[in-house]
Length: 573
Image (cartoon, rainbow, N blue to C red):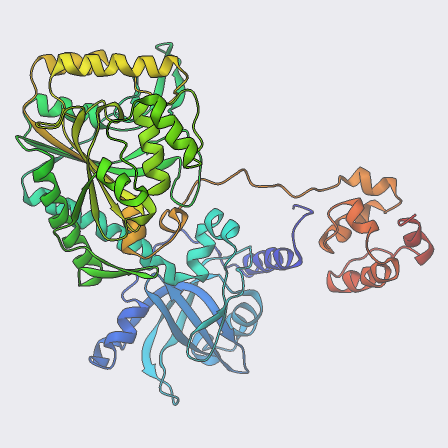
């Protein structure tokens, strides 16, 4: 047994052993047939009480009120909580009352999973409850859950809120803060609604490689790995765009994929190195058609989640019903800065960035400089859904040249509440033009731009076989879910967001404690008292430590002699 267990963990392990000593398996292999849920009972019992005369329900113990021959507990399953009434003579009908007096009252803990057979009734105070007739331990919890305090109406007033703990231990977070499950249920609805919409149009869902020999389809720094058998470098995909376009070449009229993307970049409130993206490509369409499709799709998503198209996001009310406002990239910059950058060369753009106090570096070309100005001065102003259209050609190597405006491409990004949600092009299908664009990216890479695209020869070969006119779209699912569930950080909508390495507790060895005079048999006790290091011990009050040793000896029922007070005082010299 680890010597670094808390007092609660030690007691729970002792209870575990005592349960086993009674011949009860605390982790049974047999299935427990669940016939109802907490939500079902609370919503439907009064309508059809005859259907709840024999039920089987399972979940965690979340609270208990231990009394004499009868007690109450609160059981939580995936749908909510329901009160359970436990009567000693019902679960222990014979002379042996061990199951109630010992197991239920002394050996079970908050967090343990139980299977309960019984019937539903209403207590004298009017609370719908399950009257337990049989009890099965399904899983013994060895770590205590954080205490979340609730008032009589169930309102939380002392919740488990530490983000470091909540995101790292999501299994604990969603157990003690079950209301957050609604975020992830709605996340599933977002994807399901979009998938249903696409399928209704006849477009096919596909899968493309995550491990790729060339990182393409977006401007981003990739994660790199190595395939030992082939002895070749591989990259985790930064986008699935190029593979999906190959399928348009292959003859599919519409293909889409919900998939994980990976970008070796920083983390903040809207970025995670691993994220979910939706990309869709439809043949014989363009970016103007795509705007209408996006409005129709997002309107359906809002209705599926909220039953209406106008939803609350922070302090803003966002209307997802179209049509959305449209601004060109140049016009948006001029609108919010008063500066016309449309005719500026690279040198003039650098000077403009300097005047606007925007940091840039030597690797940035004309496109990156314009993007920096837009990001710093425009993005945050775009609250209601807004299409930013017609980007400079330098910014978008995979989009078709604008049909009427020289130097621009047919592209839009959708911004909502100051963040980019979607990105779409009239896709470039001219293989010669595409090769020239890739070669321009190589020049940027030679200047130190780590996000510049590389030449994908197989993709160029596919275009040479011919790709029909195509509209393409990418949507960041995580950011869309943030909007639809009114969350301000991406970590709230990811079950397991990327975290910095967990800091391990500093623990002194047994030898370290022996060196200052602590007897070997007392080292585990000292650590159970919360002193994991010699330094922590020596910062404590000597007299209190000496007195607490006696208390721990009694509590843990130890058959060892307490060190003399003079010996304990020596530990602090």
